[in-house]
Amino acid sequence: MTLVGLRIRRADGYVETTVTTKLSKMIGSYRFPLYNPVNSNNKWVAPPEANGGLVVNDFSGGEPFYYFTCEGQRSVYGMLVPSVTVTGNSINWSWGPDVVNYHVRMEMFLSQSITNTVGGITLHYGIYS
Image 1 (cartoon, rainbow, N blue to C red):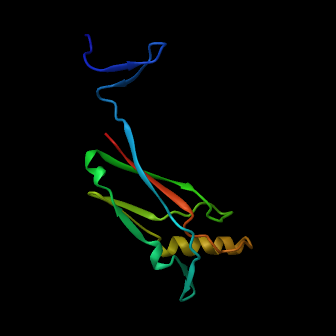
Image 2: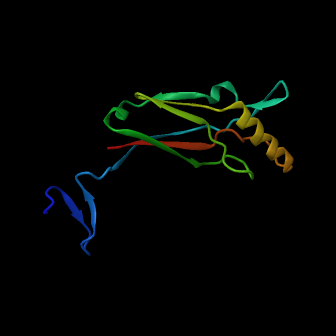
Image 3: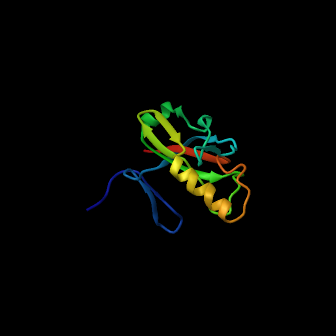
């Protein structure tokens, strides 16, 4: 049976893209400023201004995706990222208090500075279509 439709091939004949291939489109990014964690009732949390969201009208054109890159967050333990939800044309984030507390305490355990341990990352977002 002969397949009909768009097919993009490499020079060696390998089919890279067809009509049913999902392609990604980068829409934008948001760089989180660096924040110092706040001690609240003996628990380290992100400051309230670290939580937020964006309206991304282009989300209506496909299936949203996102990922993070580190841009200056100080940590020897690992990158701390917020919890992200995508609903309709909105992408929202919040820094879970238990996650922030655990991360900061691990930095303290390793005798590291806890300044600039929240934020300092970039959220990249786009759609599959």
